[in-house]
Length: 480
Image (cartoon, rainbow, N blue to C red; front, side, top):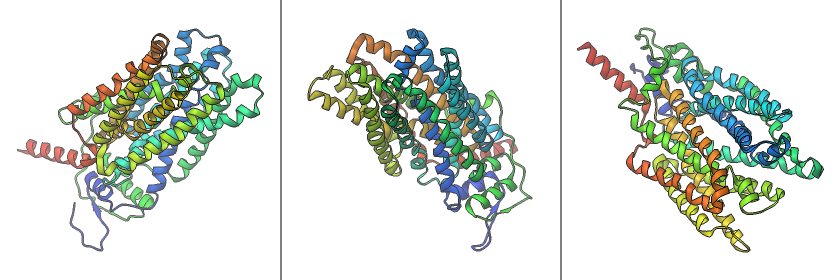
């Protein structure tokens, strides 16, 4: 960075200078906290739309007289859409910018949520859920990139991990929305409660769209990475109140790679192990979450033989109490333990709990309380550990130039894990009963094995400075 005295405004001559101002904490305050909260608002919509229909899958199957295959298509369509959105959206996020994608994906949420709510048949419902998934797949990596790129390196891991308690809060809210409708709607209309919950998702989406339009900015690090230092300087002024001077004599930024080359970079020597770790933790936590956490209404109704009201109140409590508190604990101690230890310890507890659930079998009497407590512990430590850290690792392991693609790839692999779980869990539970928990326990076991093999800690490394050093070394080598 060019020399500066203690009173003069900072001088920026490259993207590395902008990264240093944010990573060091010199650029702070202003709108940065609001931007983090608004980004988390997108996560709220993502989680709400994913979970709002979980309660109603059985009613949907009955209403449209679906076969087992068609029911699976309804459940998986949103995941397929999210997989597509994550891969394409992650690439576009790095190419055309965070802000443009952040605004565009809101249209998916509003239109698709309303289409789901009024869908007259299986085909339209499946198509609307696919479109909704595309919006979610685009939004998720953008939201995490915004959080990472507007916060200092110290404490960044905890800020990014806030997405997990927000996810559980939104999931709990989807059941909270159902509760008044359960009492207000005549019992004859209870089979359509899912329509109310899904349609209501358009409301927070509209609110977030308006707030984003008013308060959000492009990422200054992305603008600088694309060679527009003057735009980066304007964003720093507007978002942080920090005045900087642009050194126009500095050489222009080097062009970044495009197309499939960016995906190939995820597997070069520098990033290969990180990509394997992020993908493995993301996919395996998704397998256990969508088999147990997401399927809580099914577990309560089918495996524990409880009624419709319990299938609403139970998941509400598990998500708002155990899920939110577990996620907040993980955020609280993230700076001290780091992502690796949080993921490993969370997987270990989930492995023990799933094994105990399988060993207990079908509970009766007082054992129902024990099983309920174990499910709560599972949700708590999933949220505290691997639930958050898969995408946190995927977001923080790559520099700004690759963050959208890396985070999008992590999200895509997560969706593969969720689709596997959503497809196989019903089949296995039909054949194994509560023994299905032994099968699900394979996921945290594999997660622990991968973590023991790859000990990468993303919260301890400035990946943008790392990339700058690599580029500098490459340029020096060429000059010789």
